[in-house]
Length: 79
Image 1: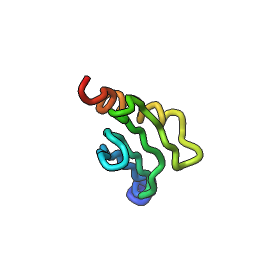
Image 2: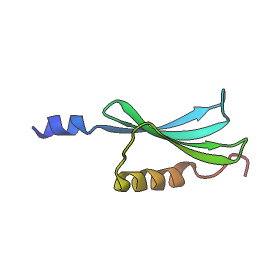
Image 3: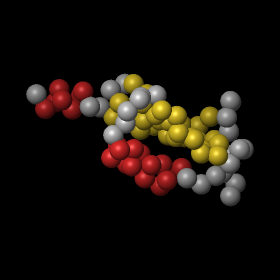
Image 4: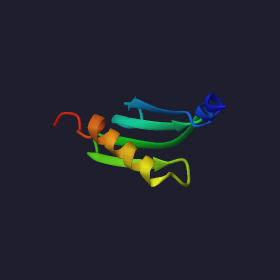
């Protein structure tokens, strides 16, 4: 039963690069094979954005994602 429960709450955090439409790096969060949010650093615009694909994300999860993002991807390229 625990294995099934674990599979139902599967989470993946991917580090992504986009140099076609945007210029930067980001982090995608997938839950149960569904994209729930993206945090992106655009180096050319010097901006950071969050795109939500899921209406509600628990506050504790969002805090964890932000900590991970700040640790791995906060700096702009060429700074």
